[in-house]
Amino acid sequence: MGCFLKGSRSFAVAQDDNIDAISLSGKVAVLVSCLFAFSGCVMYNDSDKYENPSEDVARLVYFNAVMPVLQFAELADFYEAYMDVRDDADASRRLAEEYFGDTPVSFYPDGAEAFYWGKISETPMDGVYFAEFAWSANSWADKYNVDSIGGRRWRIGCENNGTEDGSWKEFMTDAVVSVSDDDIRVEEITIRYVDNDDVVITVTGTSEPIAAYRMLYSHNSMPYSGIVNFVVSGGIDDSFSVRFSGDSEFVVIPVL
Amino acid sequence: MRRYLIVAFILAFAYTAAGRDVSRRADFHLKRHEFSLGGAFYPGRYAFGYDFDFIPRKYSYVSPTSISDIYLDGSTYNKEKVTNSWTISYTYNFSRLFALQAGVSYEGGWSECYRKSEDVMVSSISSQYLTPMLTARFSWLNRRFVRMYSSFGAGIAVSLSDTHFTTSDDKTYERQNTYMSLQLAPVGISVGGSFFGFIEVGIGTVYVGGCFGLGYRF
Image 1 (cartoon, rainbow over the protein chains, first blue to last red):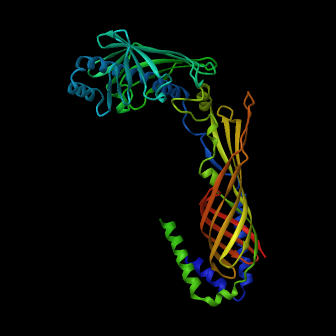
Image 2: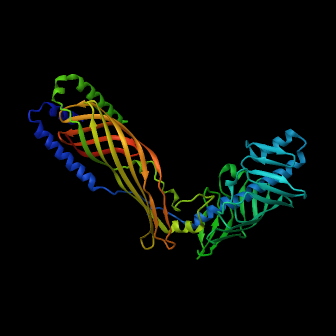
Image 3: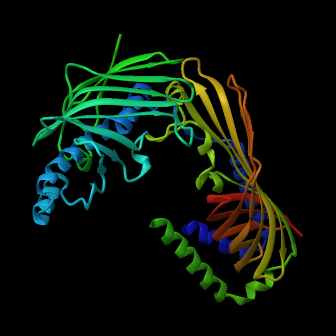
């Protein structure tokens, strides 16, 4: 910096300013020419990035189709317990805290809504409910049927043929889920999703059911055990299994 | 932090140097007209984000473009190339302190998609911008061969983006947009007589970081 300052001052006082100036201009010209030569830089290159389409598909299905089943099972289990204490405001509040912690819970004459979990509503039939998300971005489908099959077990499903915005063609979920004081178990699950290119994702459960701790949604974690099988077909041929192990990520096992 | 200290030091030096020796101002000969050509490594539009988002390269968990795109994304990689930022300008010096500059800048960028297995390009998309800009320049050190200044410019960036896909469906998209464009150069230095070189430090939608160039004044 000192040299630079001295240099700039000397320009002003030098007797032969022109020579110095031309000399410096020449250097600047060389510098600028070199910079011009670097035109057309590659600013971004993701060729070395790890990418696994199977993992991406599994994550897509988990958040759009598996997670809602877990959430709505918890919501239904809560609502069934709430029905027994609904006349007692304090007991209802304590129950809501037990299930959902600090999450705001609203009660309606024919249903209840836990802010992140969604809303459950009664239907004219006993033990048959209707669950939906507070906002549509949570899942491929907004609305699910939730049927009580006794013993804190629930059949949860949806069947949709297309969306208003045309983002996919078909989405179907059918799952049997049991809820205990400690965890949620997906005893059976079948998912079928067809996108606009007629690529089909089929997910089926295995003898190792998905098991997750309660309040999974608020803990932002994955199920602690379970394996599900994936088949992707219709122009794309891919088969793999996904194993949950309680970490924040799951493991994709290719089918050879 | 160190960068800011250096800039502050230069400003302080320039201020004191300007006031120390008034007689040196007599050496300064005001030339009214200047033409210049400059370039910058880090183009501003790229720095603040090209609108490459409509490429089906990235997806959200909730609404992917399609499952096919996920597999396409896994089997390909992307390169983003830029031309850097180039500016040609004319400056009129109203006085030794104040000048107005009219310039046009260009920057272009390409996002190219390559298939990993064969390393061949399967699609390309480009963003091109022309930015006419009017810049006010305030010279706070004027010597015969050295000038230091600050400048601020405003203009409009016109996007000449056109898109072409070389994939099997051979789709073609075109779109043009205009954006507000601003450029601030707190410190610039030009060195030379009639022919001069200049370096500016600045931030804006024309460039971020440094700009370098050559010019002619008469």
